[in-house]
Amino acid sequence: MAKKSQWTLVGKRKLELSNLEKVLFPEDGVTKAEIIEYYLKIAPTLLQHIKGRALTLIRFPDGIHGENFYQKNRPEWAPDWLEFVKLGKEEKKDYIIATEPASLVWLANLASLELHQLHSRKPDFEHPDYMVFDLDPPEGYDFPKIVALALDLRTFIESFGYTCFVKTTGGKGIHICCPLEPKWDFHTVFEAAQAIALPFTERFPKETTLHIKKEARKGRVLIDIFRIRSGQSIVSPYSLRGRIGAPVSMPLTWDELTLVKNPREFNINNAVDK
Picture 1 (cartoon, helix red, strand yellow):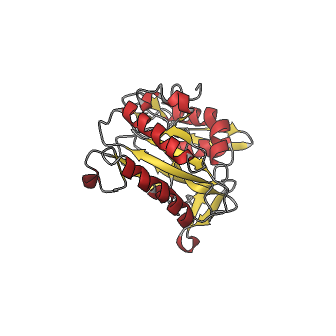
Picture 2 (cartoon, rainbow, N blue to C red):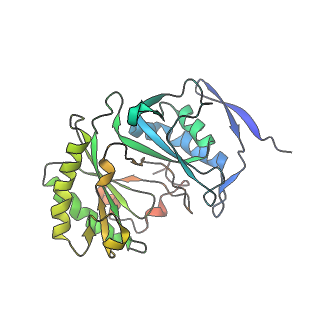
Picture 3 (cartoon, one colour):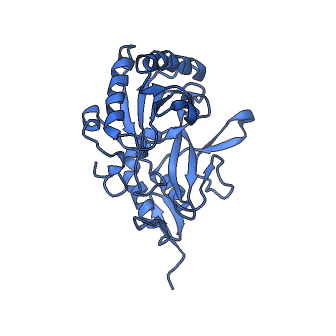
């Protein structure tokens, strides 16, 4: 009978890992052990992106077709070395901050397939250090079309003096992120994003919208600027997504983006080598 748990050493941390043979992506045969291995291998790169950031977890204890749930609070049984910060209304939520490879392994062992990050970093959680535009197309939207739209939006954003970086969401969309000095509050940054997105949607009214409600979008791509508000998050770069194919939210150069036909081509099997 296979052991249900085993101990391992990650850096200087001794961790107990459980149910390593459990398949969490049935169509792809990906086990919890492989998920832990992925996050351990990608840790040096991923940690650079999420350094000092509060995380929201999406956990899939019974796999991607089972019940999943968001978790913001650090579990009571978490090890003492797992860093956290109190945020939210009356600072009642203990958000986890991943600071080392062992942090990611511990989270992966909870079947935290997805890591979502807040937009500010320790020690200043009141001022975001980037502005994000989330291009969210309707189902079945041709990905090269959204790439073309992202390129147009990049040009438009940069005309305001910002620098744009891009990543796939691991789903059907694209994130455009613009680094900021962390000296403006969330409302001010949201207003800046709105001042860009509104005239852009007016320039491309048949292709884009700012309407959150799906029934009001009428087949158009949502330019979602509402994620930049305080307490909101986006999926972290290199995070897995709990979807068939074990896709990854992949940072790309703009030239690389133009070559992508299907955003799900970046997955647990090739993201580390990218």
